[in-house]
Image (cartoon, rainbow, N blue to C red; front, top):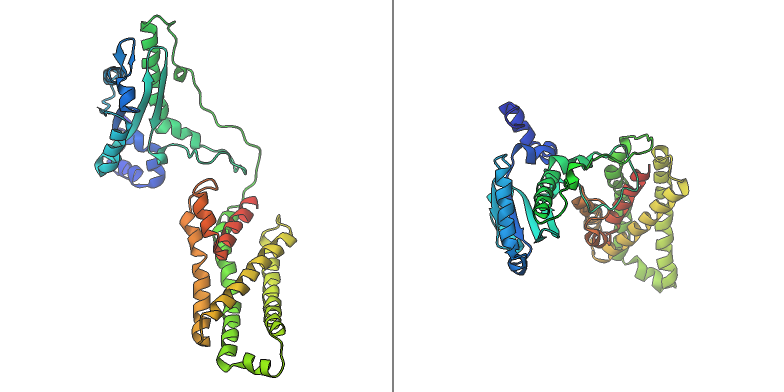
Length: 355
């Protein structure tokens, strides 16, 4: 009915745009409903002389009798169903949901509703630490058909129990209501959503020129053998190395101070000392990286060109995780954070979120 009420152009728009396809895809293009017991042993288990596989067949007949032109398919077990859905692109694309049953008896019903993860709310996020207005993701339980399937299975299960002597009762889904949890008043500036992704890029770019100069200076000293000359004249090794660190720290310290002053103009809720510490630690990693690159080259010009390219490349892994929340792919994020620019970019996300 929903599909017939749309013109062909509107229907094409809704199904081509990802945002609307996630919300209304299951309503507009209702696919095949797959049913399966959780395992072969569960399928053959008997309750009141009836196996779980037979109960699933009864449920399939019940769903077909309910109308709605729902296409169904029964599998031997969950593994077979997943193999079918994962092996054929058309099967996965045209699937509505997979109902997996551990038991379907008059007094005990255990099942799981499995849908495409893009059509239901993301349950990897345990809670939202910072609430930005009314969250409407709960509506996906309706638009995906999750509650429709739950109501159909519960209705069959409660009817089965009533036929075996239990008191006739309506399924919980008949009286369930969905409502968002209330949130406090808030103010939001879309600027900070952009800051989260752009700030690490801009601040990394600010370090490229000083890092290239430092790398070039160290390699030039190697080329001209100035260090050996000064050692012959009595310069101690510790003093020589310390002079390079002092020079680098002064140069990058001034850079960190200037960047912190600029960032404080548009990050008013972050204490200045936090910004300065955050940027100073990042600058220390720039110094260490410059010395590391300098140790790998004997040509100053080549080293000065390679250092900024390599340093900027290390910030890019952060953008592989765009679209994930803090509870997803944590192991991969920790591994990527071994690169200082990537860890710095994740820190910028936190600053933008709190702002």
